[in-house]
Amino acid sequence: VMVILFFAALFYMVPAHAAERLCGTASFYSYESGTVTASGERFNPNALTAAMPSRKHLGERWRVTAGHRSVVVRGNDYGPAKRLHRIADLSRAAFAQLAPLAYGTLKVCMERLK
Image (tube, rainbow, N blue to C red; front, top):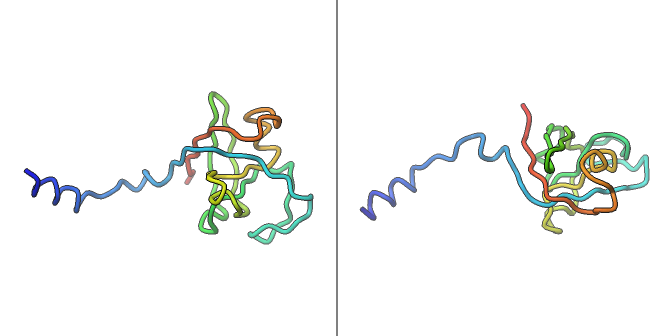
């Protein structure tokens, strides 16, 4: 039985959609308007964007859900979110659509959109 479980675990393929959903803590960031982001565009706190933990997410669109509210953001920057144990830093506008800014951080789930 152990041998069968070993080989089943060895050849088990993670579904492609499994990596497209992240759950954890998100915060908001508020650089000075006009600061250049990792994607090369100027940061706009009123745009629905997010700083993701790595560069590989630049340009991807994500649906961020907190409770019964959701917002679609585009990854245009990367930053210290991973070091701070967060899955994303949302722009002020994106965070404000999910919760009051006074919360500071928020438990969210993010689903990558095609």
